[in-house]
Image (tube, rainbow over all chains, first blue to last red; front, side, top):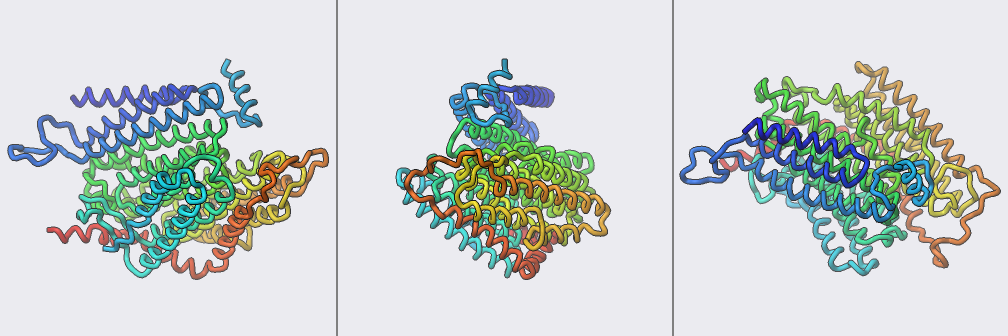
Length: 124
Length: 509
């Protein structure tokens, strides 16, 4: 189980980092999502992997699993979900305002219209 | 227990929903409520400052759960000082925003309050996970504020800002997980006691976690090599938003000052001085790069952004020395650089609404209030570059003095002094281009954008107040330093902090 979990975290992180380094915001958002999944699984494993152990007090339990990482993961899932939603909305807004979903800034250009034109040129 | 400690978080947390629900369509009501909240916050922060200076560090246990199990807030001199700085900055910059910026998008005041809630929470919290949560609160509000006013370029810069910070948040969580896995605690005071007990095989995991935290705080503090988000973000945000963001880089500096002397200070055994070999070189690089950027800037906002990076470099150099004397110099410089950078962003904002060619560093036609703005710029530039007689000079002098005799003194002196020269050249060139030279062929701003209405004087009042605060900071440097030195001593006496938090835990046994 350790191997499965560790390799899952590793593969998701690697894929997430690869997608983050792409030029288009859509793939970047996907990369962020994968990275947050990897982080959540990683956090969960920090309480040590154990099977059939209750996290809260039970009469017939011989040992307990650590409830704190589970609570942390719950919070982290909610926060990363909300943040991903914000990132999607901002990326969409950026796409609607500038006509493409490239993340690049071109500092040399003066007006947004010129900038869009330049980015369009360079992407071809 | 002192219940006032929770109020800096509760006040904005209550005020923001009221602003969203009750004052959504009424800008005047929103302004009144927002200003009232800002004034209340300053009074509250001042009261807590007084409380922190007469008492040892105080702990507030939420729900009265004892320390390592429950969530705690801790108030000591350092956090009280940061609260006052945040409240003062927000009040003055809000005054600027009332000049018209707050009406250019929706929910400006509500986002402002949420931002303050996150900042105050980060200054008060006593455990990592809530530090993470409050970082997220302040970030999600800052995403909204960053794109306030709209525009393709600004939204695009906003997307980059969001992505960088989301990656930072993931790293933060991984670091928290690593530290928890080997120490079994999230409470900073509890961690300080447990660092020594970590078995040798797990120490590498602990160090990885702690250095990842340093990296995350470095992203917030815009340290090289993770500084690259700052010029784009600050350079494209609205002027009052960029000015408020001047405190956000200081949240990173605060977190480093909070965690590392506490848990990885001299009492940490094998883990003592964990951050030292990383922080100082990064800080010196930041300083050199920031001030070189000042030379290369093409607009006043860009100039201010790189000056912020440079001043963060100076600040973190002093923090990186990890001694009480250097830390008190760092705290003084922190107060100074926050106010000076905010003033500079506001001046750039005022120049760009008055000039036909915005705040670009090219000669243009004359513009309204040119003399006054030039004087403001001159004062802010003197302060930021660290020339006498203003507070930047005193701050840098104290940092140089605290580095004297140390192992890296030559490097620190050389980088700070040469970078100051670069800064003076950069600011001198920028100021003379914008305020002195004029291009006779250039057309002045044909029609005033605001139409027939007279331009509000609030922005100028706000800038004047910030600069007056800098003058006060210089004039009362003596008594202030006395207070700050005690704050720095408190930082390097972690046992008092630990007693305040963990001492109460004995009560439930």
